[in-house]
Length: 188
Image (cartoon, rainbow, N blue to C red):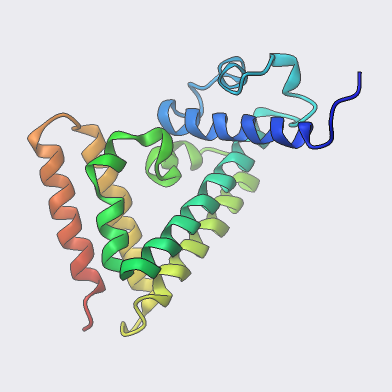
């Protein structure tokens, strides 16, 4: 049976989107291929024409999620500078929707245990984000160093706020994280 042109690409895209959402919401280890394929509206047998392994799917879906994050950062920086990026990242909406949020905040402990190829892809994408933010804070003596500090603050704040979600402490963590990140980007 022949399928229309582009069907395989569309199926692959659905698998990657479902996997990225599932990995960010449930974690890599807790996300089985059967669940991911069901989320994508496909059968289990449709997985292997697209990917050789779950490891390959993890690597490619994390890369795709981080590319989307890079586009979102570019939009935030263009519309309101680093301040807008901080506010959007440390929002209650982002905290409450990990399946659609930052891959770093959702997956760092598991990414650290992935094969070196996956960690290298993650590192390349992280450095892209750091350089994007650094370009928006050129008055700093070390813009990339400041950007790294901001990302560490943002990611750690979001992880902590998610861990205590549903409490007043969670909102307070977001607020003090925003203050800390804003302080980092101030000219010195």
